[in-house]
Length: 191
Image 1 (tube, rainbow, N blue to C red):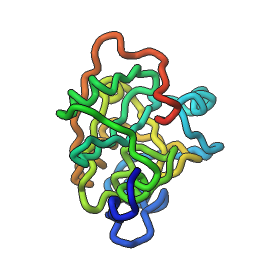
Image 2: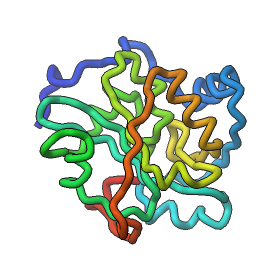
Image 3: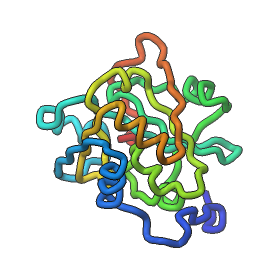
Image 4: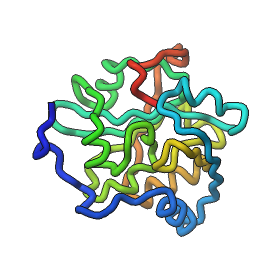
């Protein structure tokens, strides 16, 4: 278990940026976006009920780390079957574990259920790496929580990539093996 001193507050002691800050940043970058409010969702299964109301690709988002304290925010198609051993190899490490709530708050300024590529807005120290599913990027438009799991924000693929580049988080693009799209949950933890 992490001790309080193990997890620095990398947000600089400031209040983490929230949805309004994200929308302002997207506007500054000229990224068209639309947001829908809904009941909070914490898992892919809970988010399934939104599918008919929000068109486009939906995602599964993970915040993971390895023994060397390297952190990754990984986004893939919501129906991807994820093999953590395969993912670790693709990220250049041996083993991955899910980050706990303190790490989410300390590194990304968000709570469980709100993980998405938009959370790097709060990674002021630049320690979190971003990895995106090539299959997700092949879809249009894309949907993610805007630092709040009671909303879903839709952006274009180009808009997402522009945002990540502008925030100095160029993504690693992952090519999942054939047959990886299928329903599977990972202990109910990813969203």
